[in-house]
Amino acid sequence: MAAVRDSRNTLTFIRDVLRGERDTLTFWGLLIAAVTALAVLVTLTLSPRRGADPLEVRATPFPFGSMPALSPPSPVQVIPIPMEPLPSASPSTVEPPARFAVASPPAPDDPTPTRPTSSPEKPEKPKPPWSAWLGRKAALEFAERPGVLVRHRNFVAQLEKIGSASRALDRADATFVVREGLAGDGCLSFESSNIDGFYLRHRDFLLLLNRNDTTRLFREDATFCPEPASDGTWTLRSLNFPDRRLTLQWFRVALTPVPSSKALRVRLRPPP
Image (cartoon, rainbow, N blue to C red; front, side, top):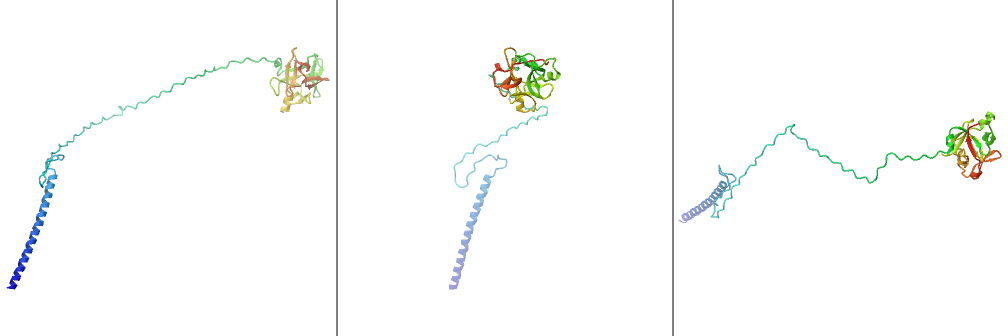
């Protein structure tokens, strides 16, 4: 009897266990079914209905409990903006871009007066009386003794009386070509007419006839500046020794430091 009772108790225990597992399975089955139903409800609520406006929002009752109803917002409508087609421009109707003319700035006023194009003519200086003899042959005559001329003999300058009846050599020795000063304007140089390239020049303060060696010393020694006197004659002053003038010493011509009143006065005249 004890064995039967034990076996009965065992069967009762097994039944109770199986009943508890069944209840547990039933609980979990119900829970899964509820979650699935909730998911389906949410999906159906949020998905738009066929034929309904996708932008329209409608209120859906909350599945659990009661909640205050929310007023649905007004539907949003999208109004398309009409787009007008651009006119097609043909090459003939295209206008070139306008060009802007840049105006040049006004010229500033020039306060300085305009200079005349032609300068006023300067009055010419009066020409000295010996200027008419330049480039011509002439004789140097001693003003105090007419007919006494300066001549060269053995390349030394001296005074002699020479006329038309004198020898041709004497007349040629007393003839000189009047030149512009070799070393200065306004002065004179005297070139021999019968020995080309030889000029009267001073050396050791004596008047000699020497060849022009084109040196500066020769040009200065052979240049004499006329100083007019009161009777139409003039004296000859040395260019490089301004205090010395031509004088007469024993029929020879020398360069002496004397004033113009005591110097040898000469005049130019045609050759004999």
